[in-house]
Amino acid sequence: MFRDITPAPPDAILGLTEAWKNDPNPSKINLGAGVFKDAKGRTPILESVKDAEAHILSTASTKSYMPIAGAPEYRRLVQEMILGADHPILAANRAQTAHTPGGTAALRVGADFLKKFASNAAVWVSSPTWANHKGVFQAAGFAVKEYPYYDPVSKGLALDKMLAALDSVPAGDIVLLHACCHNPTGVDLTAGQWAEVATLAARRGWMPFLDFAYQGYGDGLQEDRAGLLALASACPELLVASSFSKNFGLYQDRTGALTLIAADAAQAAAAFSHVEIAVRVNYSNPPAHGGLIVSTILSDPARRAKWEGELTAMREHIARTRRTFVDALAHHGVPGDFEFIARQKGMFSFSGLTDPQVRYLREKKSIYIVGGGRINVAGITPGNLEYLCCSIREALEASSG
Image: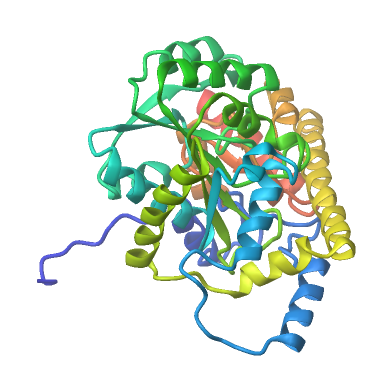
């Protein structure tokens, strides 16, 4: 069976990290994978996380299986974080949540659930979108289509084209939306634009599926809920895939959640029973450690305050890095207006670099950037900034000559 199998192509993002690791150039830079790095280029463990882990270690009494959907406290805390503790959806028991191994598993469990009841639906994703989105939904058996999102001329949102496309999505189809810190562009909707999208969703009757991987990395924990709250107010049903990889730094612990919202408590419970079946056949039940960290922090006011301070510091560090990068590009004579990078939100930026320029940077300068020019801004440090800017200038000059 295996004799004639040819190797699969490397992952568009994780494959870059492997190539970077194997590169002997001491000046190499990895701007591909989406991990936070501090000013020294490290991906630190948050102090609030260390404190929670110490508490868990000293009080743990079992390694028994978790429930299929995860611990009830974790599920409650996730709902309160993404919606707000006093949201009427929670009081009405219209939300049900499953603890998943990261945001990717939440997307896949949600896709498997939807395929069971909307087998002929298509899934619509933004153009562009995270490299793994199409693969996840195609693996679940969905046809994947695109709606316009990014305007390469203005380096901003193609709002009119986006709204026109969403206004033509058939009822019953599924529309995947980035709740904040759009990956890969860093271009987000305003609260008013979210209201327009929510109105369209309610009128057209398509199902919103939000990827909420970066809560707290855009404008703040509460501010980043704007899109979800608008859709939850307008639409009786939606799904939310959330992740704690970025805002808690739990990359290797793979901690996330799938939240289902229905028109009433009975419908939510009935639908969620099928989500649990999807969990059972995928991974049976979630790993405990990351969820225990999140629960330990969010349930204790002092620990939560410490974590929120660390999250604020990470968000502000990325915003400062954007500003510093834009200023440094100008200082080093890189042609063009890069001010749009400072306006974008979250870890990622559509840099405007073309694929030939990206190849030049990788092959000639050992700077690893995802095809299409997406860069992880958090990978820029004081130690690599000058080399990066000078290399970008060389790449632009080489492509223009």
